[in-house]
Length: 437
View 1 (cartoon, helix red, strand yellow):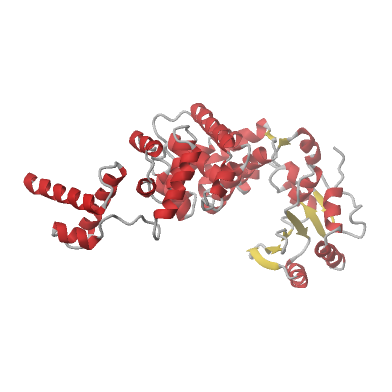
View 2: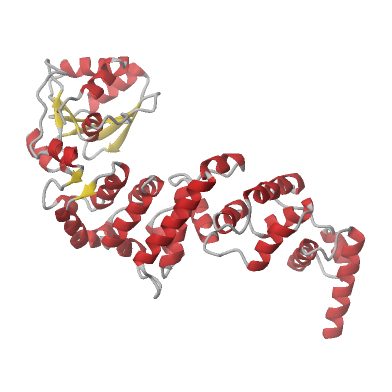
């Protein structure tokens, strides 16, 4: 690979906002370098989504003034370390930070992986200036292997272990044996990393098309045990990879992304629906001791993500699967969907369609039925609360709701279909209850 950063420099030349930034830097009293992932991506011919700049002084003033000129959005990443970010209207981000050491070379030695320890000076000869590669990062790019910049790389920032796995799956690189060993012996350090940062890295790993490789690396390095804590007694990493790989293949067959759009399933923030499915299966197989604590306190997932993953831990029962394929009535289908809870679509997809127990056409039919029958997210019962109260003598409250739920179950099973049948069914149940008492 020739160290030619033309993809990056051409990108800068055709972008007026970036050209203005370079012009402002050249009139500055400080020295600036383009560093890190954007140089790596340029050599790999990958799209540019962010650009990192290192500065010999404090870059804050320049970043703020440039942001105002281009109507960008400037904000702090870490005010103590004078690290800030500018978000452009196009979605491109630029990070500004002072050198981490006294020279740019020493700064590069403090970075995570050698493929990211590259620098291109922004000086009068830019873009035809001499690049800096003190750790043979370009050679390692050619080899498609990840090496740490220094023995204390993971001690300086334990999250780099997850970042290394993320690079391995998103760039299709291999972790060197030395790096894998360091991950294994440093893995306990991740216990002190912020949950939000762990969550974001896991999201990128599971969103990757090569997520199974990521799961394999999480298991083989022992990082999964640190993140998930004590697991169930039947945990088998090799079996888990096989099962998750099988689910991944089934997801590819059913084209989950298209289905997600078709069924109007809500997005899940950091995780795509596919990533949620793979992650949920891993959680179910691992069977962590305290799932709520893992999802909420340890990984800092959103409330919706947590509730969805918890919902997916329970398989569809044999009776439910049978009813899904058997019942034809629109109202019955809507009631069955309601009984499965707010994540009925995801549950049927995960435990029904992906397991070949329920057809996709039937799921679409159930979704249409629910949308037609529901009101404010619920299917109205055949008997309202006041009617049940008058027939049962119960006051309005939880008992009335319980009877409505029983009526809905009877309707799903085809025992009742009309209001008069519902009243007769309820009277018979009340009469039977009195005899039992």
